[in-house]
Length: 127
Image (cartoon, rainbow, N blue to C red; front, side, top):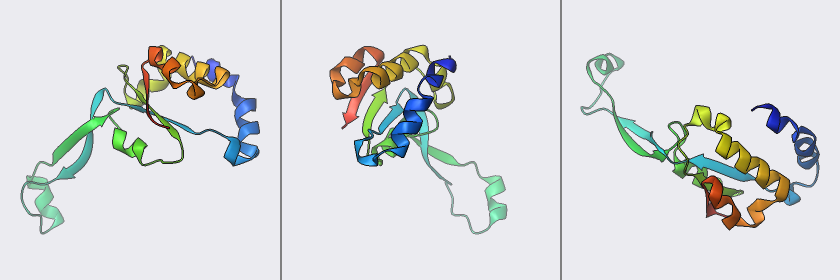
């Protein structure tokens, strides 16, 4: 699967060395996994030693298990897609459906035709 992206190495190098204003940045964020957003302790902590006796509590939001969707929204310079397929952060690049979608997006400029990416479970969030 990794070799599919190797074809784009020359394209990527050329695009990054050219005028940045013509390069389209795309953020793809997963949303199928509960992702820790923040952590808190149920009782006030006055010293590091008190942490041993308490279990941290987490608030969860939509994400890929590592990166919350809201973090992808913070990048205002790119088009953002939400990947609705069942993939976690570490396995997204081995998800064949997502890889096919990204390759088609790069090869045929589908990011300009946003509705065409929906069959890959890529839904436009911002762009």
